[in-house]
Length: 199
Ligand code: GLN
Image (cartoon, rainbow, N blue to C red):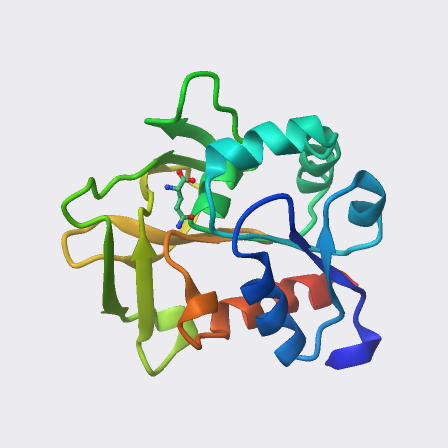
């Protein structure tokens, strides 16, 4: 796939940007950090990393990225959000800080920090039929869960208790966990396939 594909970005105002750039680059993508609206103009898709969604929200407004991002998402740009990135893509968030906004686009309601302090980090294996074998080794760090999904949303993965932790709606993909730190590249491949389909 490599060079013939358009560049893709990683939202780089906050979060584990470097890890996502590394996975995308290892897959042959031309992957760049995006901090300014002009940088967003140059990419055909974007990954929103894990980090802290309330900070991402504030910085995206401060750097003038929020509105251009919302417009690109509305226009169909492929996006992959992990953890805080899933929250950013959610139409609405529960347990956000006062005044916290999301970008929206993905017809879900996410609950921030859904696992509380007792089990705020854990790892598990998730079987995800759309990705085939082997199961996904999923690392959860102060993770959200998806509490409601609209009718256009496909649920890709649930925890054994039923909590929804991976979803897809058109070219928008989101996971509550962190493949980028677990040697798992199938979600990034899926994101790049969404980008390639539109190129
Ligand atoms: N708890 C963070 C938030 O609210 C997400 C944590 C993560 O991205 N690992 O944005």
